[in-house]
Image (tube, rainbow, N blue to C red; front, side, top):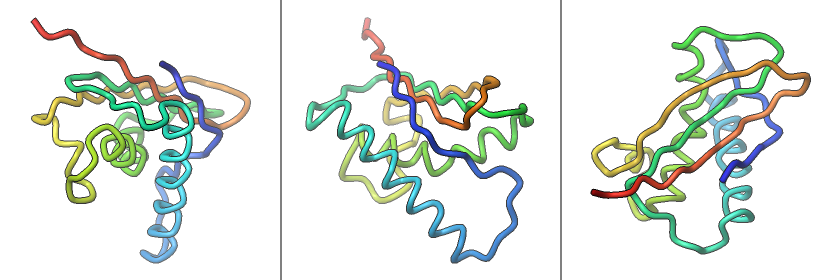
Length: 120
């Protein structure tokens, strides 16, 4: 299922830690709300593949792309695997494989696609 969230990721930002923390907290809250609205309390199963796509006006290099998704990645992993310490549910050994992509668009957004992986 594909979810599109109208937020702008922060890339190459140098700001005071408190401002970065506030931005990250707000992004997590928004992503979690969209996931909860889309999936409700339905349990998502692992293993799964999550494709995170940045929609922006111009491309960024891969390092910045991955770094800008850190907060989003944590929020998605915490939603799929609740109960782990913050920032620990995205460990690849737990069954969530993250892929990153980007595409050009008029408005900034983040697209999240969660794809179940069949065992066997």
